[in-house]
Image (cartoon, rainbow, N blue to C red; front, side):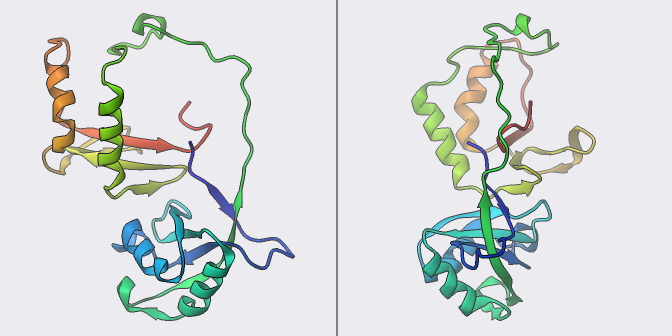
Length: 209
């Protein structure tokens, strides 16, 4: 499932459960969890999303418009001590479904040889469904870096999208313990070298093809 997209309200769309919040975001040292805890005082939070790729603006989504209205009245243009003493600039936002490109047929490849990509290994059922759920749960509680049409996590060495390679001068520490069982299984194959970096990338719909 892709990340939701938002737009400015049109004429007649005066209220929305979604708030565009400027001067607030991960680039300013404010995690999604921290933002959700502050805005959650005014109602049930449906989600916190990146408004753009700057990391300085977010979309806070409530389950209803009455909660967003109270949050707007309480926080807009005021100093928020719980968010680093920043003055928040808030306006309503509306979720946009966007355009979905339909594809009549997507070929299915069952072996790496079908794809003709050097160094690619394709292994079926490499992790179990239970391991999949445990890995998703582990990354779900960690902070994400928000970029254009995607959000990412980096471990070991940061992957730089501008040069399409890792930055050898930016060591982020050991790989997280929750990937240890998968790494051990990879080492047992004797076909792959030891990994020293890991990138997680969640794309919006119709990207990354």
